[in-house]
Amino acid sequence: MDHIIKKQLVAYFATNYGKTLESIEIQPTKPQFEGDLTVVVFPLLKLAPKKPADLAAELGDYLQAEVAEIASYNVVQGFLNIEISTAYYIKALKDIHADAHFGIKTVDAAADKILVEYSSPNTNKPLHLGHIRNNLLGASVANILSANGQNVHTTQIINDRGIHICKSMVAWEQFGNGETPITTNLKGDALVGKYYVLFDQQYKKEIADLVAAGTDEETAKNTAPILLQAKDMLIRWEQKDASVLALWEKMNAWVYEGFDETYKRLGVHFDSYYYESNTYVLGKEIVTEGLDKGVFFKKDDGSVWIDLTDEGLDEKLLLRSDGTSVYMTQDLGTARLRYTDHPDMKGMVYTVGNEQDYHFKVLFLVLKKLGYAWADQLHHLSYGMVDLPSGKMKSREGTVVDADALMTEMQDTAKQISQELGKLDGMSEAEKESLYHTIGMGALKYYILKVDPKKRILFDPKASVDFTGNTGPFIQYTHARIQSILRKSSGSDFDIADVASLHDKEKTVLKTLLQFPSTIEASAKQYSPALIANYLYELVKQFNSYYQEVPILVEDKAQQSFRVSLCGAVADVIAKALGLLGIDAPERM
Image (cartoon, rainbow, N blue to C red; front, side):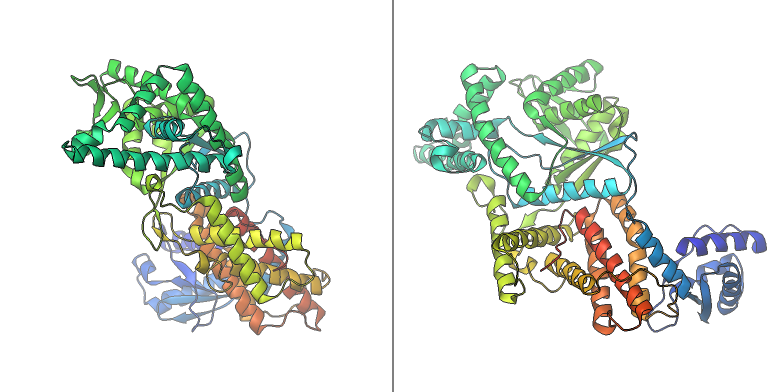
């Protein structure tokens, strides 16, 4: 309706005033006034110099005559309040029901692709709470872009090489005594992460010993024996030492098996995988090309850099003096390989925390300087860190919230609260356990995704599983409540032609339903699942207010059919919106 009104007013000003109307503000009418939509007239006075009330009345007369869906209007100073006809809302509900894909655009499989990268784990530790936000954001943004009609390809880069990987390997060699995931009954990623922590503990001990023996602290940090062993192992890895490669392959295999289990539980997937152990070589080739082009320069120690001071940045290392690569080297190689693999790709979204904002500014700028035209099509989906009441997580110190443990805690909390509410009579134990998982994961995902990606999150597991307020379970419970209504109505026939009037709250719910397609578009444009989440909360609040005030299952068959149909449309949009967030919509709770 906003679009229809805008189109009519553009034509009106062109015909009657010879002026071009470039923008117009249309907003929902405030509750204290009659009407559904309000046209703000004051900015239009520069096109038609009249008294605000006179111009508002003039436009109201025109719109009521030209737009059949406008039933009446009223003027309050410089505001034109428009009332939309009951017939418009009835037709809108019919259209929603007739369109099984309401709000969701069809994807053209032949269209240019957009790649969405997320997860990007290191193979030296299990996934933790920070990875959960990364995965949920990336997967949801991929869903939303696809719902907006874009041809999406999900991918990840696995950080399977580097000094941090060698740290776990060295510690396992020294202290592992040959233990494996099978002998320890640990997930492979958890076992490897154990040795990453153990390395740090041994490293700190050796530093303390060196300092106690008279070495200054800075020198001790650089000469601790276990660190030198890790550096040596990295060099031997890049030289393809057979024993190092065998250990690396074995420990990485443990980690991948653990990751797959976590991803399945989290409900995310990837269309392709890239590995830094492959792409760092390509990155080195790009560094050589950059030197030949004069884009990069080499220092006396043999290290390679790029000078970005003219762009307000600084000098950036691209290759160490010993010839080993850095993260930037690997990312350069990965970026070019992806465009080689996907020549139909029109864009790339990197889902990475805001601690890497500078890194991606440099990466995109370096690629642009190297002459890659597609560098302008790269986007960094930057997000804030996840904090705990106890403070920031630190992987090397073992002070992280393990992703698997957190998901178990969420499911257990959902189970406890559900049992206390006592509404699961008649469900089998298997059905209950499935529901606990659905509620727990819904709580986790919604709690994280409802926050604007740019903001930090202080995560509170217990608060996220609350069945009231702006939470996943509250929204899931509303969907389950509507399913109960639909079951009781025995599927009333959809025939609302004889409904003469609508309750104000029915109009409110319908207005919000009609905002679903534009919400998806805005969410895709801003790469923000939070817009979907908060739209959901608003829809659910409005529906519950409607449900509390207006009886659904009434004797008047036409009224009941309309109201049941409205409930069904709300449930459908809730399920679709939850699906975009990766959340299941239960039939019972």
